[in-house]
Length: 373
Image (cartoon, rainbow, N blue to C red; front, top):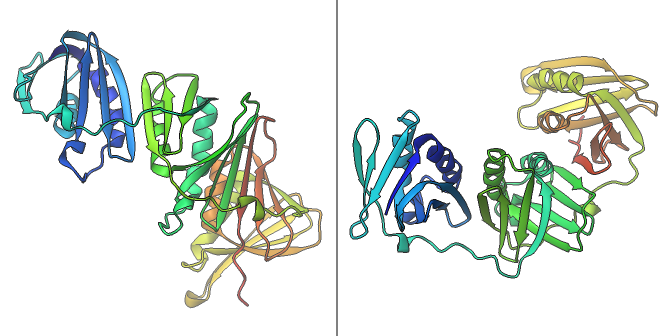
C-alpha cells in the first residue's frame, strides 16, 4: 500500500476521527486509525465501539490496501511537521509503515486491518435531513442538561422525537429540562430515539469542521448515522424508555418576568458567590417592575442582595432557584431579553427567549429550590 498526501490535510481529517478514540480502550486495536486505500481515496475510521467516525481524503494512491495505524504516534508526527507532501509505504506481510517527509523517514509498526471492528451497517434505516446550523444549535442547547446518573440511562442521552413536520430534542436531569423544536420539515416520520451525549458531542465537533449546509441523519433501532460532507459519525443508541417529559411542563405559568438577559446572568454570577455551596440557592423576590436577587450562607454569615429593573405586572412572588442552573441556561439563550414564566414558589419556572423564529423554538424548565425558613 503506497500513497502520498498533504501532511496538514491528513492531520485535519485524523483530528476529527480521533474524537472516537478513547484513552484506555478495551482492546489495543481501538487505539488505531483504520486506513483503507482504494484508487486515490483513503477512508479513515476510528471507533471506541460506542461511537465510530469515518472520513475520507483524496491522495495520490499507488497500491490499494488496508492497515491499522497507531493513532497517537501518527498524530504526533503530523503535528510536528510543517505542511508538506508525505509519502506512506506499508508492507502487507508485516504491516510495517514507512513515512517519508522532506526531512527524513519515520518507521512504525501497524496492526492487521482485519482485526479492526466491523462498522455498523445502515440497514432498515429511517432518514431525515436537517440544516447543519440548526442541528448544532439543537445539540448545544440540550447536551448540557442531560443527566450523568447511569441508573437513569435514558436521561444520560438526548431524546430526538420526529413528528411529521418537526423534530423535537429533549434533555433533562430531573432538575432542569430543555426542549428544542425545529419545524418546517417535510417528513412522514413519527419516531423517537435516544442519542448518547458522547455521540452528539463527537458529531458536533466533526460537523463544525465540515462546511456542509445540511446534515443527513439515518437511524435504525440500534444506531444513528450522521453524515456531513465526507464525514460519517455512527453512534449506538440508548435502548431505554424516555420519561414522559410533557407531564412535567407546567401549562399555567401566568406570571411573566421580562428581564435583560446579561444583567440577570451577571447578577446571578455575583450573588451565587454568597450562597450555600451545596444548594447554590438564590432567592428571586418579584414586585411590580423590580427584581431583587439575594443569597445567604448561614454557616458563614455571608449574604448578598442586588436589585435589577424588569417588567413584571403581577402579584408579588418569592421563589428560590439553583443559580448555577440559571446561569447555564441564560448562557444558551441568544436574545437580549428573556421571559421567565412562573406561577408559585413550589412550581417549576419556564425560561424562553423573548423573540424566536417560527421554525426553531427553545424552552427550558428549571425546578425551584424549596426555601428553608
